[in-house]
Length: 128
Image (tube, rainbow, N blue to C red):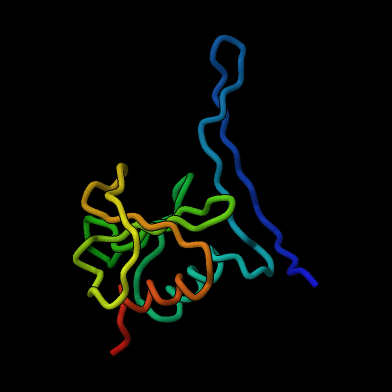
């Protein structure tokens, strides 16, 4: 049995010289599913007080009044890209990271399974 996931997809186009060009795509799960993105959104909402900011290609989270994001989730076809400040990772878990080009103060990691996602989120936001 497979999980049923319903998505809301918004695509923005710009017409240049009569040719439509895709500017951005925003995908949001609106019903069901166990995608990594849905699991991350649920975990963050349940375990942190971070405020979500929905952008065209990603969802970013930060505390009220902060200038920088504490976490950025970017859904991809076969994995979830997670970006976070390098100071957030306490060192308990080792992930293969690189610096994010959009957020130069943040590390970026590709997560492709539930266990790694939960492990990363718990390491970034340890429960007290």
